[in-house]
Length: 248
Image (tube, rainbow, N blue to C red):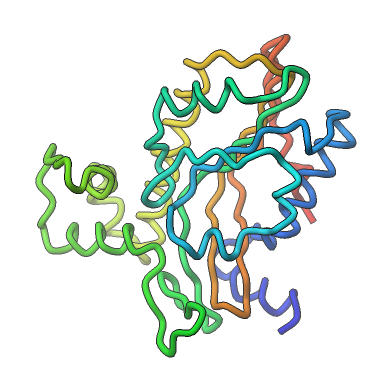
């Protein structure tokens, strides 16, 4: 299937989506051409779901960066917290930069069905993201108790509390799963920015890319719908929105 055909399927849900490969290529071009920095001087962290499909479908070219440092857990929420962010910040080259890619993921099959994909070697589709669909199912059935958090399932309980806090918005949406993914993105974006603000970085630049990572069937690959691409000059504190550099 041609790239334009794959994008047509994904863009029915996410109109600004591009392939994740194109996304990484554009980020590296920006780092080299606009920041005069080599990818080998960039410490990369991701806060994306621990689902194996994200490792399988993430572009190999990202290995030009240092890392990745793993900040995320179920559906990309930054469970690494302040300790994780501080540890990551201490690993960056002095004259380099950090790049953080974060957000939830969602599956869209080649037939355009949201919330599922056909994984490698499987005959039938399975849920993607399983944590989001599981939380949504419990929300629909009224099985989430406000404030209930258990050590044995802390990450899932956190996702449940996020969707519970947005109960009406999600359940009244045309696609509750799409709405739940948006809600989880917003919570993740808020937390990442809070963690960055509370962390000291000894480098030149901080690149923050918030997005929905879209997985598809094995022969389709993955896509990125970017919601934030900001660059912070650590020396001056200036923050710029550079989303235009990701447009095709």
